Length: 290
Image 1: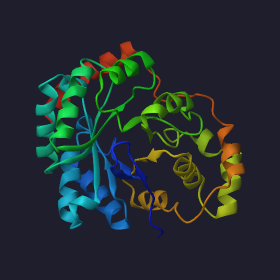
Image 2: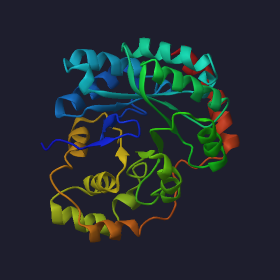
Image 3: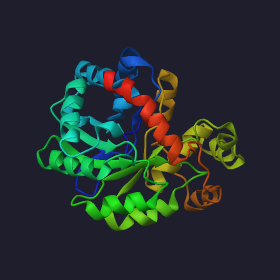
């Protein structure tokens, strides 16, 4: 299987452009099995979060894999109750314990809530102290005022902004806003949260036949060529393997332009900030107890 591509973050750190997301992978044991399977196939980027309740499974898989630590890129995310100067630094130290790692390749602020500016200052300190190699944000794409506030208070700019991104939502406005800071888009829901309408678009069916691939593989290849970092979730060994098999072909510029026409600025995770706050508050106790 052809080896994947790497991209360079704005601080010079190189990140595998394709990774395994473990959102909604249930429990540490299932996560451990999925990550071990992915690492065997050549994946070298794993994306987790405190609120996924499976960081320990990721850490166990990395230990069991026998792969040198420096070859595996690990991303995790902090939940908003862990935001604030002094609070965030300690939260990352606890994260290191859960993952059984001496450093984390990248830590993101999961949502633009609570004291995210104070949290960012702690992430900058963690980066300077070598405990975190790169720092970034997540879900800052729906409120550019909050994004601007963070950027104005930053001495280290976000390496990535993890956001919902797929052919129905290319995040071009966000991409343009982040371009001066060389902040990359990291795509979650990369196949539209499994929406069959998106997956079965005629352009993907046509290209799948041309390249002898699945429609999903065409979409994932589009992400790679569009410049996104992409982290499809799966715990199914067949899907983990299929998702990764996208590095032996290339879409033409004309095909990329045809796919671009599908952009409708559509969100699948479409909640108001009021709903966001309630979700976060409801989750706090569970996350704190993990």
